[in-house]
Length: 230
Image 1 (cartoon, rainbow, N blue to C red):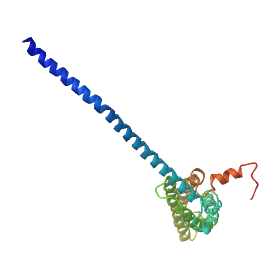
Image 2 (tube, rainbow, N blue to C red):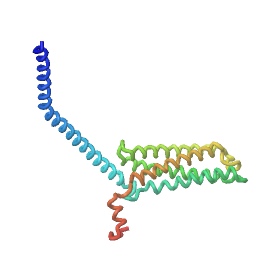
Image 3 (tube, rainbow, N blue to C red):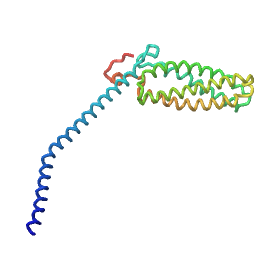
């Protein structure tokens, strides 16, 4: 009986020894395979990051330069200059609308009509140049998404003031009794949306560098040793 009990113990010890030997033989191979897989993953990630960085640089440099001569020379885009016309005209329109309602005499409604018309025409012209710059942005990028929202909001602003203009013109006595309430409400909404759209436009230029000069050119402008060519 003691001999029979010793045999299972010996067999179990032998099996454990064989399993340990197999594990020792296979562990170096498994470790090598895991190292190789990690290295391949790291190389793939590095390649993807390099490709992403190259794509981002190409997109940024493309956004710095005009797509056509009509958009303005390099470093001097026309769109930011033109937007000052509708911004000033629409803000002045709202100011005269409020004055026509609050101040006696209410003759301020008439200049508000023509100021809104100036803003509409100026906004349409500015939007054309803005769309030319918009086409230089790469789809799928954050700059393109922000530019899309900027464009949509500014189009809504134009619609508000176009509708307000015709509302004013439909009332032949608008300059006697003040700006119609609907037109006044559209002016308030339009200027409010314009503030948001303008903030996005500033983000495009000052945060994302749309249509600005390359950093190499900017550094030259801030160097004490670089000669002035302007």
